[in-house]
Length: 306
Image 1 (cartoon, rainbow, N blue to C red):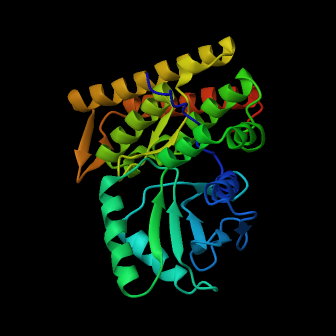
Image 2 (image 1 turned 180 degrees about the vertical axis):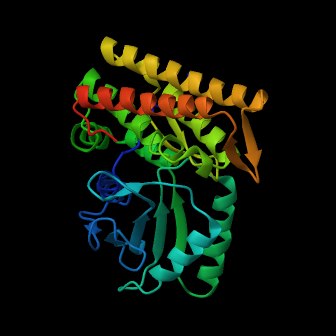
């Protein structure tokens, strides 16, 4: 029987991702010290972490960040990598001093075969021109390293995601679910919502609530993942509250579907048009109820409300 691989929760904050990447560089490349470059969340010439290796030369990593900000106005980690983004950031790294031999773009997203191929082709192009090698690190790679290095695993649990017991794990699940509710679908006027986007946003939010997986709307790739959804919570009251929120969200989605079916909601040029004011008020009330139940739980769990 092969060795079991333990899953690890990706970091919720970009600074944690940079801290982890710094430690991974030191361990994987066996360098005494990797250096952080620039201010948190602001890569300098496409570089966040830099190290010098006796065999491989100058190597650097950029830790992919989202455009969204956390409650402290710091960037969130991860996100999918497009070909255009890869080329743009690799071009920036050419200006880094000293000149690099290896440049790595790291993300908390899952492996993507298409972008891996683009990275290989771009790396070949760069090497022919006498430039640096290009590599990609995905969260799958970080999981492998966390399983391979016990000291890294211990440090990650203790100092990065700070899991010291079941309640800490519960909070990580709740934080991931709360991130899924950061959507215009719960705050913008219904008439401003494109129907397909609105319906998909509600579906994705319920998926995050039930599985702990947060999916990027455009690429459909998982960009954040907890160990599980609300059923994995250890605290009975927290689990009961999220179960109620799950039911609220299911009822909201059902009311939307029924409104479309019986003509009280229509699509006009792709956008929602409410033909029945009472239904519109009902949908708004259900959206507010979802956010209230979530925020009540966040306060109870000593987490910031959204």
